[in-house]
Image (cartoon, rainbow over all chains, first blue to last red):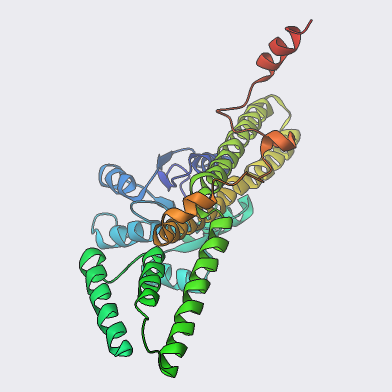
Length: 128
Length: 212
């Protein structure tokens, strides 16, 4: 079944420039319903109001990191099944393991390109 | 006996210092203790006393030269000038790369909008090129994170230097009154100024015109 590109996507990053870059790349991939949050707690509030089909989050954020956001999401019955892609410059294996154990759907290391973003999205959403 | 007198005086002196400052005293005070201890060495001096005397004299001399060498390094200036200046420069790098990245993104978005006016084949090619621009702008986030790490390291160094200045006390400040040998932006005239202090082109043009 083809992926519905009308799903709401929530992107979370404390760097507004990165939000802009990811939004533009998503737009090129055909995903136009994109919301932005600048930290984990803001993302949680938005998740409680809106239904999202995908979360793409940075790891390094304060006060709530991407990993803490992931754990909160997986612990919340309402949103626990939402696909979650972690995007980070931290490529140490212990970070990847920690994210996997917390229930991350996939993991993108910065700097990344449009092809990598698409590949990881296909892996969690299905082909598009 | 002399040795007994020294021990007693030393004990009294140490007790007084401990009451006044606690268990941690400035290096200045250590020198003072050694000096006052040496002054108590009078009368018959045994070989052991003499050895102790020389050891204490060496210790005092070592502390004095260490203080002088550290004062020459001007740790107070590292704390008050160098590190704040370095962190300001790094913050300026983050700010200017962010501004430049956003300008690049603005231009790329305009191009993307123009793509709708092109035939589909050209538009697709343009989209690919613009995607490369977006991807390349990742660098700004990464450089920002790396610079933030460097700034944190500088803060730690600043705290350590601060502790050093406190331990060594007033003599460090005296050392810092020596003439500066630092090469500044004024000497170099080739480094970018921080945004708050830089003149823009219009100001330079006005200044140049004022000479006409």
